[in-house]
Length: 129
Image (cartoon, rainbow, N blue to C red):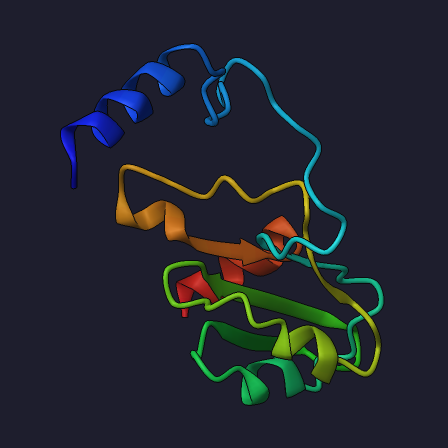
C-alpha cells in the first residue's frame, strides 16, 4: 500500500460521519421478521408436544400436568435455542411465536436462560417433580 493512498484515506475518513450507530442512546425499530425469544399462548395450546419433538436444538420441553384440564408448562432453554423457528412452523394450534420485540437476551447468570411458561400453580407443581 502506498503512503499517499493511505494518507488520502485518513484525510477522507476524518471528514465523514461515523458509520456506526449510537445504539443504547438511540434505539431503532426492529425488523418485522426478526426472531427473538419465543412467546407461548397457553390458551391455544393442546399439549401435543410437536414443538418439543421438532426442535433441532432440544430447547423446548413440554410438561403435561393434566391434559383434560389443559394444564401445561413449557420450559424454554434460551441458551440452546438457535432461533430457527421450527417449533413455530410445527405448531398446529398457532400458539408459538418468535418475538421481534424481546431480542436483547444477554444475561449475567445461567439461570435466567431457562424460561418457564404457564400458570404459577402449574409451574410450582412441575418444578416440584
